[in-house]
Each structure stands twice: as C-alpha cells, then as structure tokens.
Length: 210
Ligand SMILES: Nc1ncnc2c1ncn2[C@@H]1O[C@H](COP(=O)(O)OP(=O)(O)OP(=O)(O)O)[C@@H](O)[C@H]1O
Image (cartoon, rainbow, N blue to C red):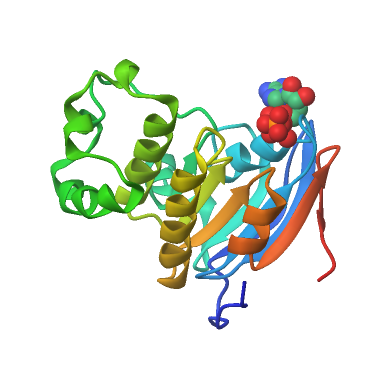
C-alpha cells in the first residue's frame, strides 16, 4: 500500500514499552498509517496490543498526538486507542445494546458496508454466527471513532466475501486518517492493508526490510 503523507507529529510514539515478559518496543505510527504484524503463534503479538491499550502491566511511554499516556486516564486512552481482540467480549444480551445513542448513526452507516442486516442488532449475541460477531465487533470498534485501532486477526472467522468487505472498509478508514496496527496471519492481507510490515519473534518486534 502507498505510504501516507507524513504529518508533523506521529499519531503514536511508542518508547521502551515493556513488561517482564515482552519488549522493549520502540516505534512510531503515523496518522493514516497501517502497520501489519505477523509472527508465529505465541510470539507476543497480542501481548503488545494489550500493552498499547494499557490492559496488561507495562512500563515505558506512549504519546498520542504528542500527549503522554501517563497524563491521560485509562478510559479516555482506551476510547482513543481501541483494542479489538481476536475473540471480542460481549457483555449485554444483544449486539445493538452495546452502542451508545451517539454511535448509532455511524453504526447504521457501517452495517451495510460489512454486509450485515440491521435486524441482527436485536438478536441474542450468542445466536449470531462467529463471522457476524466478528464484523459486528469491528463496527463497535469503529463507532468509538478511535484515533488508533489495534486489530487482532479481524478476519480470522470470515468467508472470502466478508474478508474482502472488511479489507475495503479498513482501507477507506485508513485513507481517512485512522491509524491501525493489524495483527494478521495473512500475508496477502498484510500487503493489501499495511504500509509497513513487522514480524514478532520471541516477543521482539522486527521491522521487515521494504
Ligand atoms: N500475563 C501473562 N503472563 C505470562 N505469560 C503470558 C501472559 N499473557 C500471555 N502470555 C504468554 O505469552 C506468549 C505470547 O502470547 P500472545 O497471546 O501474545 O501470542 P500471539 O503472538 O498473539 O499468538 P497467536 O498468534 O496464537 O494469537 C504466550 O506463550 C502466552 O502464553
């Protein structure tokens, strides 16, 4: 994918981010940039995403548009740096109940783009197929209007048509300025969406040479 125009300050500046079992990680992510991360199972990819959104204990510093995370409360941070795990959690009976009133117009705009019927919003989450839940989770993440989206294998449960719709939507969002860190086992998806490519090995991150 073509490199985005560089903004003056990186969207995300990660400096010596580490835990007793992972890192240190130091890298920048620009506004409207997508970094893909590949690597074997158990290498530490999800650990990194969880540290970035401050769900796992970590030290080091992260700046969002130049503002240190240490000066931003965790709920605000997690609303701007949104983490979508490989198996997203649902805590209310229906998918629709997870959207705040202010998020509904955005949700309604996104549903058809991922080939989802609005009727699914009223179904019990447990009745949705795995692929429907995965696409609904992406809509839930995007409806938060994040600055950075941390995606852990967002198309793992999807058929080829749904994968294509998801990739088209993500390309559009990234082109509009969303910054994404995309963990994927699909080399094709990494090439389609990523501006830069990294590999995690034994909890160390290596940038692939272009
Ligand atoms: N809190 C923790 N304490 C100790 N070890 C942990 C902790 N959380 C995860 N691990 C271990 O760290 C390793 C990396 O896990 P992680 O989930 O990041 O792998 P991954 O690269 O995302 O793998 P996959 O591609 O299978 O999802 C695993 O061996 C996991 O068991």
